[in-house]
Length: 439
Image (cartoon, rainbow, N blue to C red; front, side, top):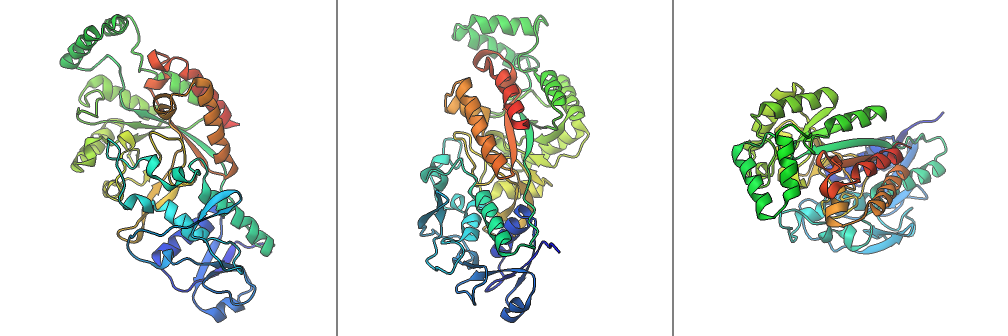
């Protein structure tokens, strides 16, 4: 009879080891692992078994262990590189008895925990960890979900060694998400910001924008950022459940949404909540004044009348581990910020969700991280790609996610679906992306 139980012999039990083994064996392969340090108990079990350690006992399913999962604290790692399945590997092993000539558990832990983001690095202008500083960028695997690839390969090897072992791989899903950084382009800005907009048009001699602003303000034309009915209709026709992350914060240099006290904005937020799930888009300022997030969550919750437990950072600001600790303290259980603004790719080398492991505190938290691999602003503003090349990039990433049974999470903004100014034609690209992602 098929069984999903597997016994794992380990030298000693550590939080790091249990975290990454549970992620790979339980979450990605659907197994029920039990851990033992008792050699005799391991030898006597009749179920599938794996040995993770320094030397094999006999000819069991043995994986040579690096020391990373038995360490505590954060220090520079002297990383060595190898290759497997034509892809780079970390933490090589020279034990020929091992199923792998690298440690897939240590390598996966290093990538998922974002170990490198706890080490010194050169920040970008917003204080973020840039993709260019990452190992994935430097070694050419940024667009490959290595953790998932290794896990699926391990599943095949385990099934070959134990034909009665029941492996249940993760299945592909598609979740469209929309960030609402600015609900309106011209309307409901307040007198001073409206005058400032006109002055900017005059300074730049932008008469086309000045005329459009006037038509919108006098009700002769719909505000170009008000694309919500179009989005809801498109998602409904495609039977998609979406998440909208709303910036609901005080005005600031990098937080320029409509004032939260504005009646039209509050009605819009409630309308979004009636048609989709709502998450918080924590303000840029909240990264430096954590109490701001509490106020933003309370105000948005009272407006949409639903519990807010999902989050994506405005500007994708992530400071390890303080950002995630702040979210946990505020009752957030799902975060969607794990990705890069300037590059396409898998920041944590996975297309599947995972629990946040706090490296400084050395424990597994309850915060689930949902990674994304591509944002429309990355393609348009950072990479300067054409619509045709952007579609090809979307298809490439979706293919990678689909092959490992991951979740493809798209990031778009209500602004980018306006079919105006720099976003002309991108609404049609969005429709093509959805069509491809739903195949």
